[in-house]
Length: 98
Image (tube, rainbow, N blue to C red; front, side, top):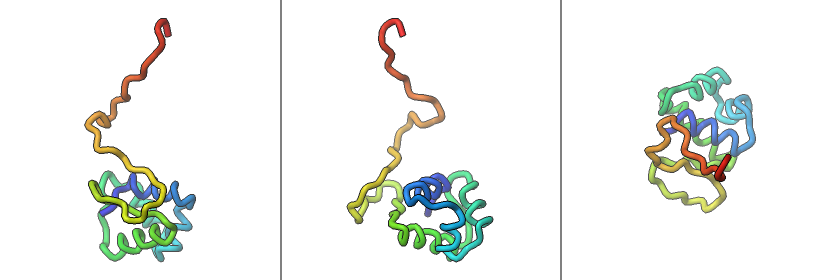
């Protein structure tokens, strides 16, 4: 499965817009927009989800499941499983008197 946040991040890593992703995946731009506007895990037709994931792979972006190791060995980013991400900003160290 893929989350809406993963889709947006994957597009950013690939340097593509929604139109380019839609064209490569063979789906409509409104479909991509709906998927990216989802809350959490994207739900939809399995075939459509597979096409989108395949398109990302063709653009050189590997979608990782939680806890999955990267097989590609390329550069990338991963969001840590961190309970502090509950919407609160993490404390910032400030110099004395700042």
